[in-house]
Length: 371
Image (cartoon, rainbow, N blue to C red; front, top):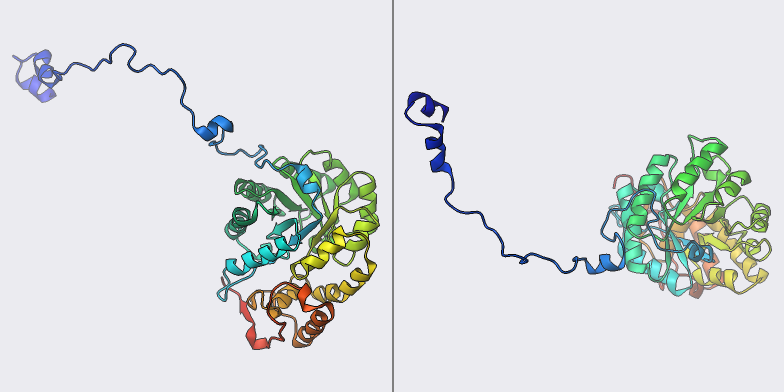
């Protein structure tokens, strides 16, 4: 255009621009044709404010009452089964979940130590929490293990867990790279802001006890549901006397914790195998005879670090495939033979599954290092 104006001085700028102008007149709507009488709103958004908006870190992301969590008596630390290639066996998982629910379990810990959350990627972890909520969340409380020794990682995992619908979070104190008492308080207060939370104290795994002053400090938070305590019934009784809700973390102590020390209930490994009997222990009053009958099974389960015994037992019962993610390996043959005798003594009908208990050979087990 500039070249045209320079080489032809007879043309004015108006003459050049005029042909480019549209002869169409702009559209003007008729008066009042676009007036709205009401503001349109999504039906769900009209009922639940900000329903469609992303959740923020400091919001309570789940509508579950903390009191709903505090009242749970039998919570199973659910096992995660695997396919031969090491991926989750969701069919076996769903079957095991169903057995827990029909036998009275009120809650499950997903991806805890027993569920081998330590061997999962966070994508796997959150997917399994979401799957459990979607399939069973109306029948049982889903408590996701979203703890970490990194506060940043714990925040992110807990955000995701509540976003997929978990009812509460389980949080451990920072392990390996341990922190001070004030560091523990700061860590727990940060994640407690997100929703109902159970704190888990197991020094045999973390290398550091969560001392009572830390628990009493964070118990003032309204999202604090209680503590899974593994430091014995004397401490449990002391906490209960001061108004802290406690679940025993030790199957061998849970009967006395419940009926002598005031614990609300148990977060149990053994209930994966005998949920009905563990329900009876928690709900039917003192029963030292049944408790003593369960001791051989419980001692057998924990002769090696959990979940080695549980994985072996469920495989022998035919409830899961005999697949282990390394570094876990099955109990030796002699121990597998012992388990058959334990099942016969307690009664096969009290255990999950319908197949006869088997003594599996070493070659029956699949050990997976890459998955």
